[in-house]
Image (cartoon, rainbow, N blue to C red; front, side, top):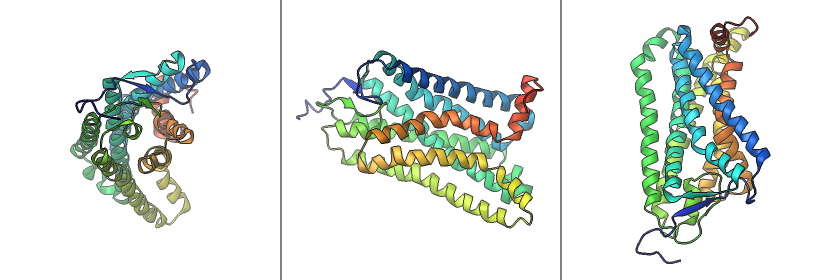
Length: 313
């Protein structure tokens, strides 16, 4: 297809959603509505508990609070539009709306990658340098670390938004996903996308695989330190302090590699990939507060104290 004066002729995109049907899907709508409400409520509870209990005003819970903030916004980028599609069957989204959704998604997906890496480092310092933990992870270091995560997300968001904004869309306008993202939009462009592809692959490596590599190396050192503890009870107690974070990382990157990083290289967006993308973008933000609350005695104690209930154990 020919470009028209180097400008996009497509002003509206059609977001396919989870399937190609144009009929409202009320049952699936109720399921995802429930997931979204649990996500928002669960993360708000985590934030409230951490704010309420001064004993949780530590580096670990400071980062957990920021993770909850990211998860609330992250899920709100994609889920409301998906809910609208499911309940109405209307799949249209404006060009500017599509780019905006893409921008916010890219912002928080990268911010969370780096935040998980910092949380891994926090656990490494707590286990390997317990006497110097509060000194190393000072308030200034914590604040700067979180700001760095948000700045990295912002830079990535701007780069990807500008990259997509400079592309031309001349004909097909059906986004083969349940939200607007870089890879499915590359497939629709009639421009030369080689520069955009190169920038995107750099982001995948630097902002995706970079933090993952750092996390794996950090946990390798944590495991090495834990194995040197003389008693089995001591080893179990020490490793349990980072078990929740490791579970979150496994869920986030396990599904993310298959649904996001892998399609970035193959440009395949089949139904299986979209189903796993649901786990990565929608289910994980819901599971994070459950994982941290159910596996964490301090959070459960603080929640019991906040609610003033003797029935929570």
